[in-house]
Length: 183
Image 1 (cartoon, rainbow, N blue to C red):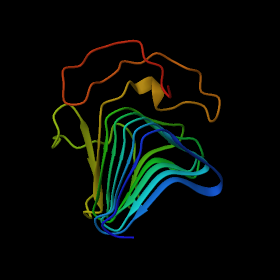
Image 2 (cartoon, rainbow, N blue to C red):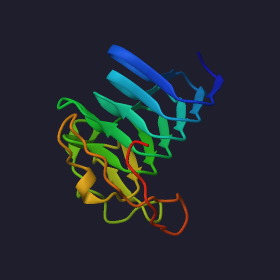
Image 3 (cartoon, helix red, strand yellow):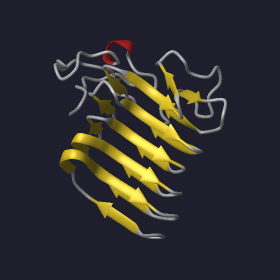
Image 4 (cartoon, helix red, strand yellow):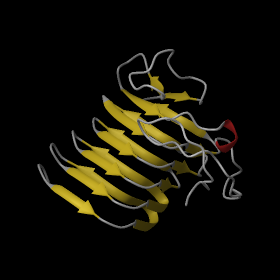
């Protein structure tokens, strides 16, 4: 499908081996989800071939939280991945991903092409004020993420205890409030 626009006003939940919360493919195709996206035993969001996805809530995928191949993804909430072979964020081939919340994973934080990045592997300058930017040397893509509290990036697999973290309003002053990851 190309040049299509789809809006889902609520949450998206998928389960089953290799499931996708949302899978967007094709030039000019755009999907917006007004709630959270969850994929059990799969990928939260996969976007391919010049397509675009926006999730206004959190994204959870056991294998990859978000995965872009020559595409664009924006997540207004947190991104979470729980399986050791996966990553919170996977960026391939000229893709751009923006995460306004935290990347929560027990394993690989961001994978750019074949290069794994930790939270501390960000670039010295960012194209978006107040965010950390991750790129690779082969122009495979970039991930721009809101700085997260360090304690939420190395949680034990599947045994995460809810913790209070600061809430970050995108493109605004930092304001702290009681917020529990995943809610």
